[in-house]
Image (cartoon, rainbow, N blue to C red; front, side, top):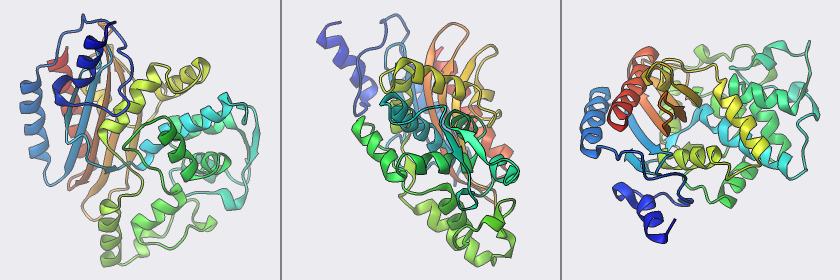
Length: 335
């Protein structure tokens, strides 16, 4: 590969990603129809207003990128569990952590729902790091995520790892036990709330103010460009050892959440390794509805895709349908 094609691959569509890595394929994949993508996705997004929707889409065959407000930071919610898992596995690769290490969950380690681990406590208290990884990524378990993050040094350690990899546009600042309470206008999480926090007891004006503050908060946000940079480099094996890369991609492929989002926009026979993020619907709004992942089509073409939505004033199912529609439009034009 000469320098000229490499530079062209990183600059296609006038969109360049910080840290654009080596060209990862051939020049055989057809180019995007940018105008058709712009037209179709813009129409879908405008129909979803006043929700904000940002999108980034990369062909892993030629590194071509299309995006819609791809540099706009958006609340992640549980999407952060994918880069968290990568940071955990980097500690495994460095020999500072073992997948078979047993972690005992104390009352002080519990986090709010969604968390089967919290519901099972105290009858079940011990899990291996491997089990916590699966629970955090596949099942989106909040306790598993918080315990793993604490084990490797907290939110700052995850963001520091991302910075060290030169992955821009993703920041992780808080634990789930903090975020989920702040969204609802509640005080610090209490173990007594492990099955259900008293959200309904918070006066509506207080909940609304808390929700609006959350949606405007720069903390715990990601850009769509940042997410496809992370995903494409994970899939290429650039961030972790081969065993760790394969393990995380396998767990992402087993994700049990969001079947009506990106997955619903893919053609029959496609596969998806992905992570969703969702904020609990409240006050006539589905505050955050996200999905990011690697899609593999029956013809072998692979795409990194991130669709991040906030402030959707509709039922969750209708908001999820927007993500499916965006995906279908992009795949139709990309092939």
